[in-house]
Length: 114
Length: 116
Image (cartoon, rainbow over all chains, first blue to last red; front, side, top):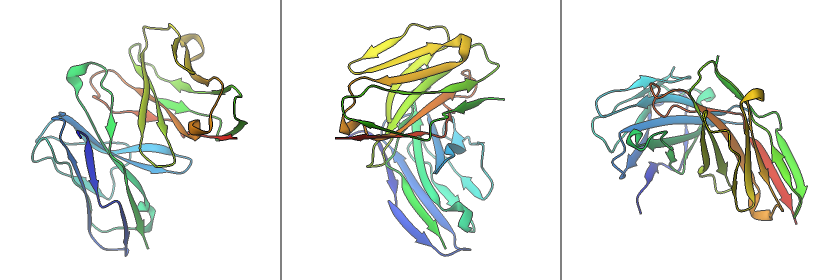
């Protein structure tokens, strides 16, 4: 089934540790995104990539980094996790060729930083 | 500034009642798109509708309908004859012009609980 796969589904992490959330899509979408969801704040964009080899900062990029080596993969790295990064992280992708592109979301990764 | 406000944090209704979820947006752009997404208890985000700023025609899809009014910068969502399966968090979102490909600005979300 075409879509977005995120891993891990859930993770508990000690503060200061490095963590990479994985995201893979099989729809050949050019654009990919990472959002975090926090109660009362909705979803906020962390980083995005319009095409392989390019990335950009979203609304809340501090403490996170991304890479886009190919079309399918868009990992999100927390270099040194802090408790404020406890959240649910959603990866998404879209195909701009379709016009006002609709985002397809992964199932989310729940991260708890202690 | 671009912003989406969903003033209703939580709504609780009894099955078969109609319910309207409010969405107010702010943007200086003349071209933009508006979206609604549903997040059921399972956690995934499901696309419901997309609307462009030039199309103010209301839309109906089964029990769902959307009222887009540029004059009041609102894009409200109504569920008619609500069902327990409609229980979810609903997000309204704004997409700026095509130069910001796909970057959605989300509202805070409205949690809808439909009781049997």
